[in-house]
Image 1 (cartoon, helix red, strand yellow):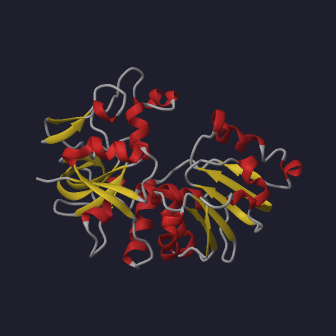
Image 2 (cartoon, helix red, strand yellow; image 1 turned 120 degrees about the horizontal axis):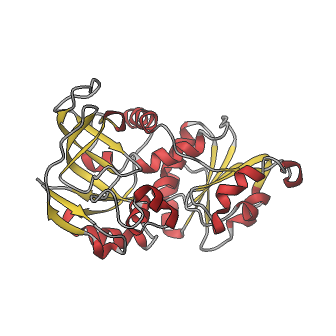
Length: 324
């Protein structure tokens, strides 16, 4: 089969298109003929092994998994003997943040990291519907979201941010979206009640107060956003932040909340991929979620796709199409 491989960490140019052996599924795995994948922030971080401590998981000196990619959609061609919820012929989509090897014609993945695709959705849309939405859902399930609350989403047009806006509207909260001028119409179409154009004003100077601030691009900080929070408010970031502060502040701020106006930060450790996939599938089926796709690249143009994602200028998701 054709696959993208990398044998050392580095810039996108280390990626190579090669012919390799098709994977054989384990007893609890399914073999998927991949039709679409994505390139996302997780993939770029894995490629460069940054931050450095990622290497404890991905491989200290060289990548343990030679085929990159996390999100995918495709058709199951074989299943392991212990697989019960999926069968050959099923169209599925899924995700593995530790690496699924999706940037290839075939992948083998655990049964609980794939679910059947909803009716009427393309492979491209399905492939782009898991990673960003999974992380967005893991922002939401870390707090007590209630109808009518006020939430600000910074980076509302990224894969996580565009998913967060849609998921928050499903929970009937008031959403303020922060984005660039060119994307105002987009975030309004996703359901945002209010839009702040960060190219014109500093969103941290907004007069409105919020129950939660979701920094889905990790470009701000708890201390900059604290004044936006209502008493009891929570700041959550998708990024470790300066000197990994977003790993440590969740341990400190709950203890010193009285000194911070009863405000704190939480780190959104992502859990339960299968639960997220089922939730996203339900929303898609009911017309409550649609992944935003910026560009599509063929597998053969994977280097260009990574370079584009690394500019930090993508809107929503970048999809990789896989031909057979």
